[in-house]
Picture 1 (tube, rainbow, N blue to C red):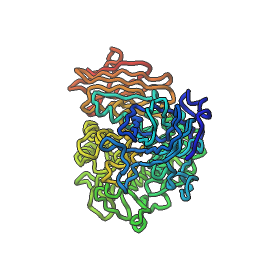
Picture 2: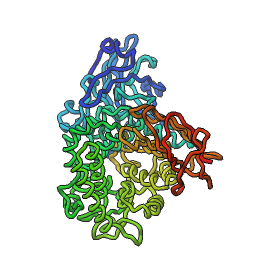
Picture 3: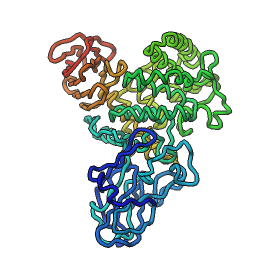
Picture 4: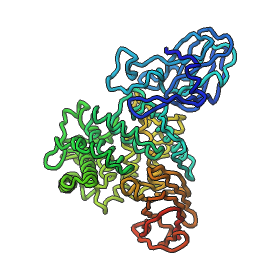
Length: 594
């Protein structure tokens, strides 16, 4: 237990934070006051901080308080008390420490967990992301129970010292819509991204505190839409290039991360020195005849292909020596490399990747696509078609255009037969292919396989899995579960970068059964503001930052095919159930379909 005297923090506590730098992006301690203090017995005081965060507690006694106290930290609440006995196999956090108070302010830390606190125990993985020593030991908790405190405990005598990214801006992004449950899901996901910045690098929650490529990519996507910072994603990328993990599909996620940075920043100076190393992330060392092959013995040892995690979330996927999911990732990564190569003037590489991609995709279609059913099988030698064998190709635009809507309908009809990891890609596949109503419904479906279930559970940070019964050792503080943090602004508001650095934005709201939505999307060129209402007509107000233009497409309303821009008719082409405005939109604008 590390003690800090109050005067050591006094200069910064009034401002609410202490800024320090971790191995990654700068983080700081933020003082947070409790939302409720309640004495529940003669011996026990319950303190609620409102939401879970990673931190510890500072106590500032007034008057003689030289007795011994015990402080219990907890992530769960049960029967009106902090849960001191969470499920044994879980990593739902509970910890306690006993200290002797004196007249000065004291930082009360939970005991170090040797699994995830580098340098503070006898064990510990060298790849763990260290927390600055000055911060002390931190864990995720919302509640504390204090035993032995004499008299009243006031809000001025206790603060939670929470660790957040220094650059985090609560006002950088906003989303709200006509459905209150969707709003609660957005709030949960946005705060989840903020709370899990504690390490200065994206980590997989508290159990290990280690970055993984797929976790980091999903975290990056939602961070870009909930905050303006890009440094933490870049620091995570550089860390993972030096410390790669398993399984197969995690490797091409590094290409996905670099491509996401490129699209959101347009920063060739950052990308160029990292480009050559990305070539090793394309799985070319495992390619035979344009497709990636798999060592089935490695897969059985959890060292090969993953498809989804945990294994029970794979919808009965049949592993073969050449399988669909791995090759969908492979082809998409090669396509991204071709685009980045062209942007960097590596024209020979771009040509090579484009040629290879066409041949690889042709073999992919021939080997895996069942034209009769309009579905992909799991791999060579099997006729089983899992959810995953189809959601990834559809999300990556590998499906022939004429078959996409049918496949999206099939996927939506199967429901959420995947993990919170694969749900990111399932939602993308649905939103991009006319199934936005179904995608929104899946987000807030009844049962225990939706973000509605997380909200109704009372959690304040997203989980690693849909429920403990699907992954008993899951973290309750896992940012890869926060996919709606990017999905809602990307699709319901409709804002995505069409050209690198947001030079041109795509504004394509997918409205489902919602009647209104509005929000704020941070970009390096400034904030995009979107507000739409779907009543007798569909009307959208936009603010596009200076130097940016937007290509806009809107949902048709009934039989209408007219679009007004600031009250004046403009040319719009009809494609399916969308109207594509033919001229770019800039500045502040109002468009109406009527």
